[in-house]
Length: 375
Image (cartoon, rainbow, N blue to C red; front, side, top):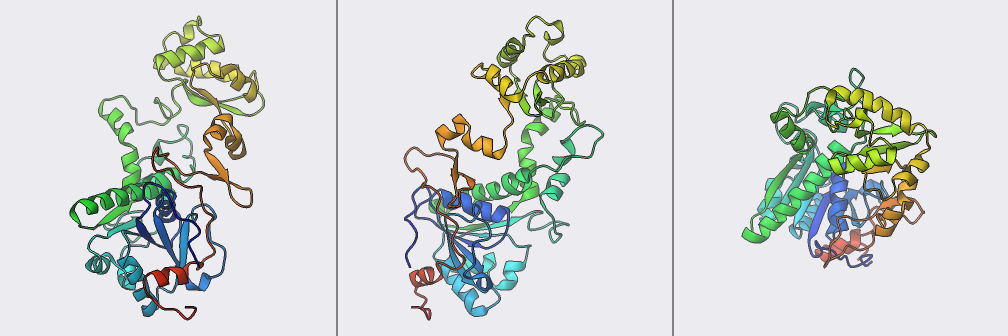
């Protein structure tokens, strides 16, 4: 069996071993694989022959099916890790140590290895062994408490802030920077990526505003939490929505021009907080007079920072996204995001489909000199 395609991209030539998990760990693996890393996912041997658990998060991988409770298979995993630049694991603290795959063991065998650990609470602290999900992590950092209308139950956002941005993307950054450091001094290290830490880092702007008394710790009272009438969403006549984000004065002026409000005294002072409620009410009434597509046409190319709120299908065919090929399709026709960011000299390949579990077991083991029955 041969690899599906020779990967290209800025990380081509680097090997990452992903100990199969869910959510942010696979997202990290996808990001690295999208940019050309040879990501080998260790899946459960009991799942061999089945379709991959996720058609998008598991793309661009090679899948090896082994039993991490079998000492012989654990030794095989260690031999694969011996050839790797990095490891991704997303178990609770201490689990890989009990399996015989902990960082001390791996780094002793491969001193240049970057050992990436993905958890919600981190490797230590009072909550380190507690279970949790995205909602819990963003709750404890203050992010969730800042979302939603005042006095109402905070909304349940998509799991982007904790799992993906504060988790998988943070770990991808940590692994990549640590691999770069290992290329400089030959020393690997452990990367402790906690979703609570990553969520907190994403709040840097808000904390900076708090430090300058430019943020009120009360929901929907600030520039970026729906309090400002020029940075919120408005319902249209057909039930669709328009996203208004005209923060800077030139964009605010353009928005007022399109809306016919340039001479209206209520909107003369953009940052007069005492007028924000009345301004928002007027804008709500105004947007409700036309459909979303009618407003979209009115604001098209007007430099106003006003956009239609699209669903997933609409986003995939929007002219700008279509021009940039922001989205592609899986083999079954479903939408998937294409790799990002873009590189001028080392562009990423089109995504390869998620493999059948265990498809590359014999291939990878042959590469490390392990003879199998199929060999």
